[in-house]
Amino acid sequence: MRTATNVISLRGATKQFGGLVAVDNMDFDVTEHEVKGLIGPNGSGKSTTLNLISGALTPSDGEIVLRGTPITGLPAKDIARLGVSRTFQLVRLLPSMTVLENVMAGAVFGHRRRWGRAAEQHAMAILEKVGMARQARAHFSQLTYIDTKRVELARALAGEPEVLLLDEWLAGLNPTELQAGIELIHALRDEGRTIILVEHVMDAIRSLCDSCVVMSSGKKIAEGTPEEVLSDPDVVRAYLGDEDA
Ligand SMILES: Nc1ncnc2c1ncn2[C@@H]1O[C@H](COP(=O)(O)OP(=O)(O)OP(=O)(O)O)[C@@H](O)[C@H]1O
Image (cartoon, rainbow, N blue to C red; front, side, top):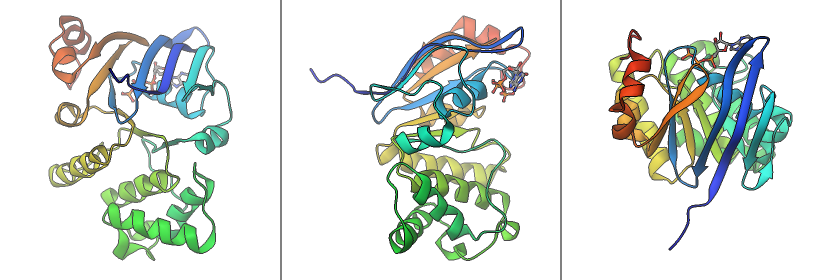
């Protein structure tokens, strides 16, 4: 029997902010080609968990392993180089650069580095994939909201990451854009990419995720397929009173 290869593993990952334990002893594995959803009520520690994996924050305790290599506490740029790319809740693009230049920056500083012409050709191919090739020479200020999100996704993909972290990538989209956004992530899923996504849009969780980890007050309270976790009484209880319940 073939066993799935772990791309990312968290072992007892913990983050304290003063007296608050924002992430409390988290354990989970993400296997190759898996789309893993990280869900839970507001303030349950999802973004902090992504920040621990990407190196934006250093764990207070525990270990994070990328394909067998401990990455715990490494600087974010080193973790990106080793193969973890992410998008942010609030899009972070460089406004002085064109769409193409922003995506090229992802190719230059990512996992599989490319320079000059090779970076440009690769960036154009990724822009094509996310439906932004025609706006390659545009600046940030000229883009619609969903297009800024597409460009940020392209920047994250341009480094050819081993694992892609999406932090509420679908948040703020109108219903038509949401459909387009879900289709785009579906296409990445169909390419066999390994993805961890933090998301509040349950339709997206149901249609995109192989499995989900549910967090509440920093702790993992459930893990399984979207159907399993969303019918778990503990999960329903954790969400009660939350607008997404
Ligand atoms: N830099 C920080 N300093 C202090 N407390 C923080 C910091 N970042 C997050 N927190 C706190 O840690 C807890 C978890 O926050 P986090 O943003 O990870 O939750 P979340 O599940 O992503 O929430 P949301 O769904 O609202 O984005 C919250 O109580 C939050 O206020």
